[in-house]
Image 1: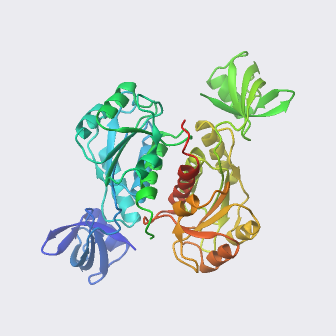
Image 2: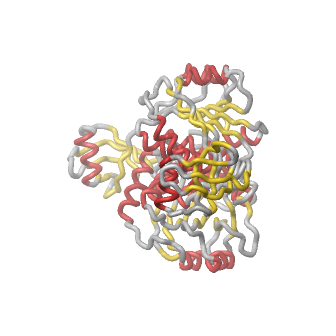
Length: 244
Length: 244
């Protein structure tokens, strides 16, 4: 099943952007009258008919809307410090989207070596992984902030808030699976630190803002692997009762 | 902590190969008398003293042996059909090693598009991921065989044997987490199919050889992501009670 990304423009019509139009019309050679499956990026699958097979700006008429298509039964916000090597971060963004992700929040820790991030490439990866894995909601890419600012903004946020760090600071860490099993919160927010881990100040601030310290088991995981293991833990605990 | 890979040659001495010697002596500038941490690839950490700082063939004297160093409490054999794009398979090999893997068995299914595999690159990746994630046992890379031959060889094998397919064939699939929780077998073998899935004949043969059909939840996962999610499910169920 091939999915295209498009926004509804007016009265039951969708316009594909230049890239999607070219792919649809030039590469896949779709013609007027063909059935297309579009996603709006906000969770709805649109079953459409192609009405204008323009390779620059194709138009499709909506025949049916299927909301919450292939959605998962939780809301996951992964706040992950960018890795030195961006390939690894991009890989994580792709895989976490496949598994199930709602928001990716790049955060810079005190010990982060990388301090810049190009959102455009990440946006593309999130969108393409959404289509490839047959989902209709593209994870939101939050604006990068410092770990401290992220924690501060989360102070009054609802849900299960977890911080994965490699040391005990105050409250001893518990296994992520154990904490997930003991909670029925719909929203799960997980903070994953940089190569050099969080600083003790960051861990303390997170605890004060309601984050519970967790560990991800006995293996030493890279930042990007830790993020994916955390996303997979949520997926397996919350979303694996149904099948594809 | 920097680890080197080396075999014991005789009487408490280890010899580093040309690549490890160059890295140790030329890049990291280790000198005679320095403490080194070696792994033998079979599960033992060797605390050593460098006695010959040759950049081509360094020698180290074993001071202490720590067997089963950072080992995990299960034996996981992932039998995964190679992906069309080998980068994705290599990525999976790296990440599964980080999370916890004992054997990687490349298998070719009826619907596999890729039929060749270069073991040398995979061996290097398995070894380097082992060192990077501070483990002492390098996962074994099995010789590639067909899915049918793999199933046949597993017929009398012990342990929990699972096949992840995307359709029901006979026995309905259950969630991998559920089957893992209901079993205390030490050895877990998981078959992961190619892009085009297993054929019904392969699924039937697997069932007849004692494989239980499982699903990996509601997300549509690529082959390499499915393999990592399966490895992570075992890791979270069996190996996440202790911390790093």
